[in-house]
Length: 101
Image (cartoon, rainbow, N blue to C red; front, side, top):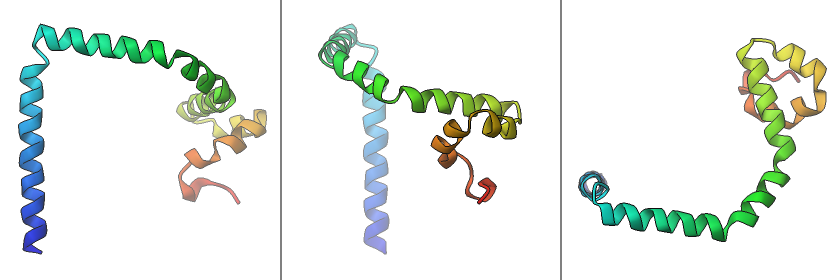
Protein backbone atom coordinates (compact mmCIF):
# COMPACT_ATOMS: atom_id res chain seq x y z
CA UNK A 1 0.00 0.00 0.00
CA UNK A 2 2.90 2.32 0.72
CA UNK A 3 4.27 1.81 -2.80
CA UNK A 4 0.93 2.85 -4.22
CA UNK A 5 0.91 6.07 -2.20
CA UNK A 6 4.48 6.76 -3.24
CA UNK A 7 3.62 6.31 -6.92
CA UNK A 8 0.56 8.50 -6.56
CA UNK A 9 2.55 11.28 -4.88
CA UNK A 10 5.20 11.13 -7.62
CA UNK A 11 2.50 11.30 -10.28
CA UNK A 12 0.91 14.35 -8.65
CA UNK A 13 4.28 16.11 -8.39
CA UNK A 14 4.95 15.41 -12.08
CA UNK A 15 1.51 16.72 -13.06
CA UNK A 16 2.04 19.91 -11.07
CA UNK A 17 5.49 20.53 -12.54
CA UNK A 18 4.19 19.90 -16.07
CA UNK A 19 1.33 22.32 -15.50
CA UNK A 20 3.70 25.03 -14.22
CA UNK A 21 5.99 24.49 -17.21
CA UNK A 22 3.07 24.75 -19.63
CA UNK A 23 1.71 27.92 -17.97
CA UNK A 24 5.09 29.57 -18.59
CA UNK A 25 5.53 28.10 -22.05
CA UNK A 26 2.10 29.09 -23.36
CA UNK A 27 3.01 32.77 -23.01
CA UNK A 28 5.88 32.36 -25.49
CA UNK A 29 4.99 33.82 -28.93
CA UNK A 30 7.01 31.13 -30.74
CA UNK A 31 5.11 28.40 -28.93
CA UNK A 32 1.81 30.08 -29.75
CA UNK A 33 2.71 30.33 -33.45
CA UNK A 34 3.81 26.68 -33.61
CA UNK A 35 0.67 25.60 -31.81
CA UNK A 36 -1.57 27.58 -34.19
CA UNK A 37 0.22 26.14 -37.21
CA UNK A 38 -0.16 22.64 -35.86
CA UNK A 39 -3.88 23.19 -35.25
CA UNK A 40 -4.41 24.66 -38.75
CA UNK A 41 -2.59 21.75 -40.35
CA UNK A 42 -4.63 19.26 -38.35
CA UNK A 43 -7.87 20.98 -39.34
CA UNK A 44 -6.89 21.08 -43.03
CA UNK A 45 -5.78 17.46 -43.01
CA UNK A 46 -8.93 16.16 -41.27
CA UNK A 47 -11.56 18.46 -42.74
CA UNK A 48 -13.22 15.79 -44.88
CA UNK A 49 -13.23 13.32 -42.01
CA UNK A 50 -14.91 15.86 -39.73
CA UNK A 51 -17.56 16.58 -42.37
CA UNK A 52 -18.28 12.86 -42.72
CA UNK A 53 -18.44 12.44 -38.96
CA UNK A 54 -20.93 15.30 -38.72
CA UNK A 55 -23.10 13.79 -41.47
CA UNK A 56 -23.07 10.36 -39.80
CA UNK A 57 -24.06 11.77 -36.40
CA UNK A 58 -26.49 14.38 -37.68
CA UNK A 59 -29.67 12.61 -36.57
CA UNK A 60 -28.24 11.71 -33.17
CA UNK A 61 -27.05 15.28 -32.57
CA UNK A 62 -30.46 16.61 -33.56
CA UNK A 63 -32.16 14.17 -31.19
CA UNK A 64 -29.78 15.07 -28.38
CA UNK A 65 -30.35 18.78 -28.92
CA UNK A 66 -34.13 18.31 -28.80
CA UNK A 67 -33.80 16.15 -25.71
CA UNK A 68 -31.84 18.79 -23.79
CA UNK A 69 -34.25 21.50 -24.95
CA UNK A 70 -37.27 19.63 -23.60
CA UNK A 71 -35.36 18.54 -20.48
CA UNK A 72 -34.50 22.17 -19.70
CA UNK A 73 -38.18 23.08 -20.07
CA UNK A 74 -39.18 20.10 -17.85
CA UNK A 75 -41.31 18.69 -20.66
CA UNK A 76 -39.69 15.34 -21.41
CA UNK A 77 -43.12 13.76 -21.68
CA UNK A 78 -43.96 16.11 -24.57
CA UNK A 79 -40.65 15.21 -26.22
CA UNK A 80 -41.41 11.51 -25.85
CA UNK A 81 -44.85 11.90 -27.42
CA UNK A 82 -43.81 14.26 -30.20
CA UNK A 83 -40.58 12.51 -31.24
CA UNK A 84 -40.70 8.85 -30.17
CA UNK A 85 -37.88 7.85 -32.55
CA UNK A 86 -35.61 10.58 -31.20
CA UNK A 87 -36.50 9.58 -27.65
CA UNK A 88 -35.41 6.01 -28.36
CA UNK A 89 -32.07 7.29 -29.69
CA UNK A 90 -31.26 9.32 -26.58
CA UNK A 91 -32.84 7.17 -23.90
CA UNK A 92 -29.33 6.41 -22.60
CA UNK A 93 -28.88 10.06 -21.58
CA UNK A 94 -31.54 9.70 -18.91
CA UNK A 95 -30.65 8.52 -15.39
CA UNK A 96 -31.33 4.82 -14.99
CA UNK A 97 -34.12 5.26 -12.42
CA UNK A 98 -36.16 7.62 -14.63
CA UNK A 99 -36.34 5.37 -17.72
CA UNK A 100 -39.78 3.85 -17.94
CA UNK A 101 -39.74 0.15 -18.71
